[in-house]
Image (cartoon, rainbow, N blue to C red; front, side, top):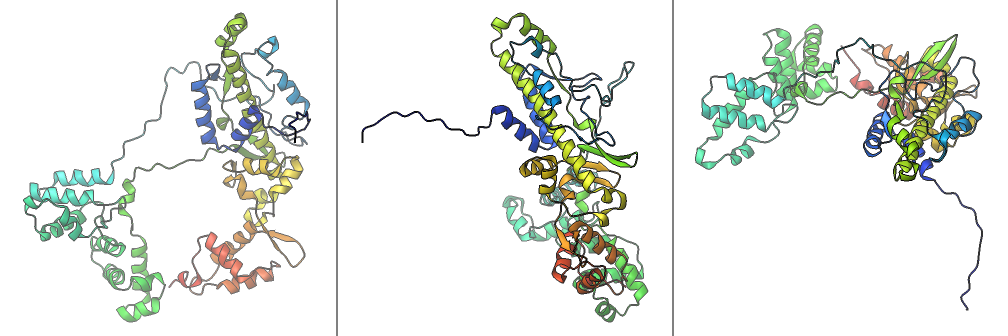
Length: 484
């Protein structure tokens, strides 16, 4: 065959860099978004953070009660066409605005008073680790240098919960032979560790940990019975086999109940209170409140980053366009970023309001009123792709009068009812919890009985479904819910 050249026209979809960035920002959580913005601030001198009372995002539109348009169709309505003109090429005079203002409405961001002369910063108190706490006690003890060395050696072998998982024989092999330690010296050193605060540290098993804590309590019949149960019948206690415990210990129900309460009040992880792990707090993206009889979603001002284009560099770029160099491209990138962040919060707000409208019974009556909802329903309602709704609802949180929930929480499968309708799995789990909370603790309900009670309410649920939902709720089986 003779080689030839042919011209062919075809159409195909291409993701522009701006669209790729928009998709990436949409799926980021609030924490990840802030990290990404910090990276842009370091790399792009044309972008800066708004420090004053006004913010580039202070004008983001909130949901007005009775409004049919929740946040506008991103990239599809007249407001977006107007915003598009603000992100013109560097050669256009109209494109050089020192900051972007998308709307004249909306609540202003919280500002500091001009008379505030002090800059108060959060100061976090230093937390002693478990080993530091134990070594400080050893330093104040009257042990000899030799014993103090062994005690600190065992302290270094403890885990974060205060347990010693290595055998003493293994630890003895690690000691230098020239020190001529005896295996009994390690046993004595371990006893010294077990006498330190917190009580129970240095235990090798959970049983030993609980036993150490019980033996440190004042002598009483309940305490003595609790020691016997922990050291000899802990499996029966875990299985709620109270009849065998009474038969083996010859105790009455009152003493057994007091001993059980004593055991439940112990700490099986005594070292965890000195853990350096800090709690992680969720910053909600959307707030929900009731206005004029309607549940309304609004953006959380603290979650919205306040960005603008640098005024000084913009002015210099206007005056020296011929020598702009890479600044013109960085200016366009800064404008793209600000626009994409605004579109991100527009989309989050639209999806959140759609969820609130669909689940308004939940906000009025709680989990039992949750209706079945799928991503497809929200996507069809807002004329978005289902994958877009999935990105929006992942790691985005909504603060409501009933608590803080991830947007994914409001979606769930459905279970058929006798009337031909459907019940949400979240509502069924709430009903299961209500039934178990109201049951007689001496005669707890079986999974089959719970299924029968739900069937009487018109909700057709199999026993295995009850087991699945009960496990998701971290509710133990019927044998472990029985009490005296």
